[in-house]
Length: 250
Image (tube, rainbow, N blue to C red; front, side, top):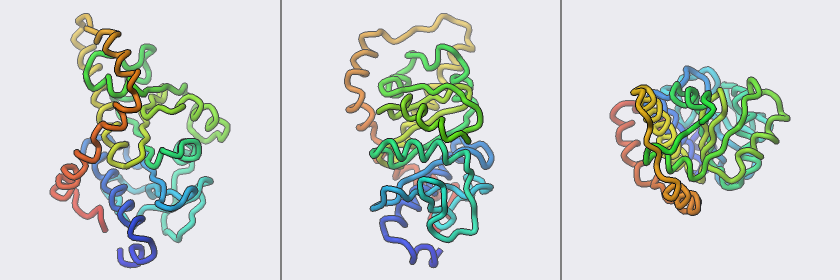
């Protein structure tokens, strides 16, 4: 820990701690997919350097020191004994490069998220949680394992200025200016998917939230998504991690 901490700025070390905590929080909520999917964050003071998980490490094992620093091409820019998943970074680098505000990009393969992504209707306005996502939601059609650099153009075009994305037949993605907000956005999107699946399992007719309410939230999308309160929930998440998954700050 000391060798890595001493090689980076105080701001980068804090980012490393928060990003490692985000990986642990994903594991804590049961959203991880073995060693697959990723969360990346832009290094403070740099437009082209990012932190991402070491490929092969379980999310609950990620630490501040084990995170790998790479450039937009996925090349390591600081010594690390670990490699990264090239397919994973195609998606993340595309979003980071296109969106200056996307300091953190979170991508998951949850069962609920993939299930909703495989339905033609996608996310429905049937819960309060869904409204936050629907206020800033986009979709991207499946193109196979994300190794094709050409897909980046289409992905960022579909993403536009939204903060929530459903990758068809694939999973979920959120991006935000902070790790705390990206995590909260994913919490809301994942919970909305879970609620929809449970409601559909009842076999009953679903009660949609009126279009007037949905239209009002969409009209205020920027204000709604950027004041979702990730910073308010984050300290509590860290305290829970300290009790259940300590060591992320090593």
